[in-house]
Length: 231
Image 1 (cartoon, rainbow, N blue to C red):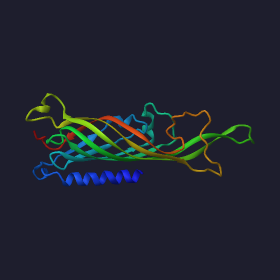
Image 2 (tube, rainbow, N blue to C red):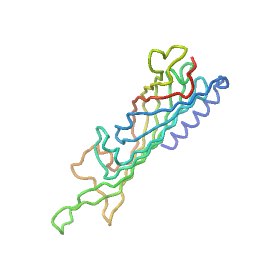
Image 3 (cartoon, helix red, strand yellow):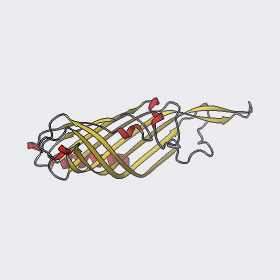
């Protein structure tokens, strides 16, 4: 299901780009982008990206993120923890701006992403021999594949955003809905299978799961254009 979703996204993007008749006269724009909220998500990471205009109404956006162990302490509203968590995420997006003038204006977008997280999770197991519980570190593997249909607004900062010489710094606000397939598994250690702790948090993001569910996204990004924006 997840692979079919990503394949459909790719086919739609190629078809929409091929049908855009005004792309030949467009001045190509390259934007460097960053989403500061990724530092405080359930999987905290540094996630830079770029946006490249294909025509006056279409653009592609690609982001790549890495979350080293020390960033995990920044996660907000997160339930569940790994001992030495490492996370990677790749996100790609095709945009269609409602009016000519990309990369500025209101837009619709199709987005696909993949997230992987690895790290050991310590669980106290009763040995029945020493009379006390001992910690065992189970390697946890998490993978999430999904996509969203989004709507958003990207504008230049300041009062000059509608002038003939707008700022090269932009903000990008968006929201969207979609689907995600999440799979979390744990390796067996010394013949002992991982059992989620009794009384553990129900919303633990590392509890074993293999399911398709609805997904929502909401955020803001900042961007810098390497070329002067065209008005």
